[in-house]
Image (cartoon, rainbow, N blue to C red):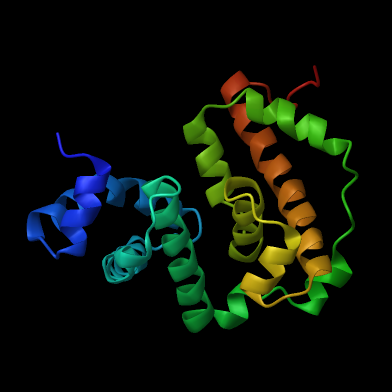
Length: 196
């Protein structure tokens, strides 16, 4: 079996087999990451292709100071966000009207959300997150899945930190409703899921 270091070194030397191996190893996981931000599978294919071109072009800068998958993931996320900014700027920007219409969710509600999440499979949770409107799904995913701060999200999306916070709260409110629907269907309870 080829080690990660040998794989990277082979790619740095532009060895075709090493590039194919690296792509085969990481592309499925990176496609799943990309699908958290973009629903259109054809666009995802393009973004993954662009991402791996950047990976191969920039492998000389990888210093083995962290997992290769995490390094690739950052490139995929940045490529995805750049793609969204280019083709859907008006849809992905969080506009002032969103801020004015959204009430801040009490953080104690997070316990209720966490309980619902605990009761779901990973597939159900992935589905629920994918149902969020794009501008909220992006902020939610960057905050919870990628561990970005509101300051980092604001910079990446070219929005204010307050709008990042408000959008996260809005996404949690919407997600709570989606999860409640999923749990209601799973439990066969027409009136909703009783709190534990």
